[in-house]
Length: 290
Ligand code: RIB
Image (cartoon, rainbow, N blue to C red; front, top):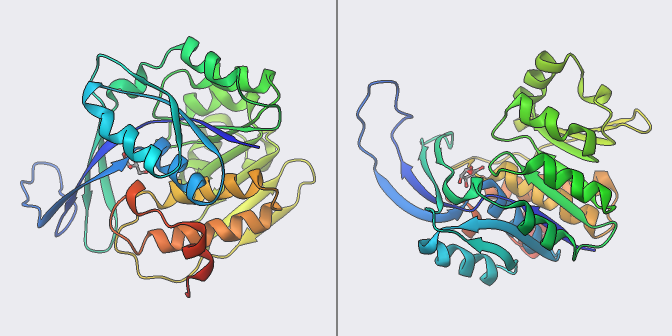
């Protein structure tokens, strides 16, 4: 099977900060690095490094060829990435010493993907493949509906969170990824707890407490514990977790096993500075000692 990812591609400008700046504050960074990023690109790289065949559907600007080349280098099929006459998306990321971050997003080309581009890509997908989406591109509901009609399994990572964006794709979803705060926000907006959303699988990540799977079919709830690590940079850890869960499912693992492997990948990721470029591969994840 394969994973299709309608996903953002960003240049991540990562600033090391003594603390996260507050309103009105001017604060000097102690370091600056540039990485390949974007929630979409991070998930594509994670799933490819976990062993899946991944096709990225997205867009960059004329100066974004380096990002496409890097995705390809990391094993992602980049043939469905368009080059538009718009700037490539970028993110300005402040990371403080405890690993927490603050992100300013400039969406650029990520929000100008055409329906035709998605239709052409998905016409090559097979029933049973997975389409994953996040909230950093346009055309989310349209793509989800097309994929559902073609018999793909549709997964959505509700980040950056927007209740209306989640509700627009909800009817087409087989899998929904939320963090604890997003799950509460969605419940406030729609009045439904994760197990009542009508989605076959809802995964809520709980930070240091691990992750919880709600099986919409059986009503069963399964907890997967987190691993104990000292974080240096939490950026991209959630994307790594999502990519690894999807790859596990794509490769036929049972949900609990896919989540346990993803928890190891996410734990390893928070011990590293950076985003897509530092996502661990399956061998590193399996051999890591926590
Ligand atoms: O989740 C981390 C990602 O969010 C970064 O790579 C950044 O580009 C933003 O999309």
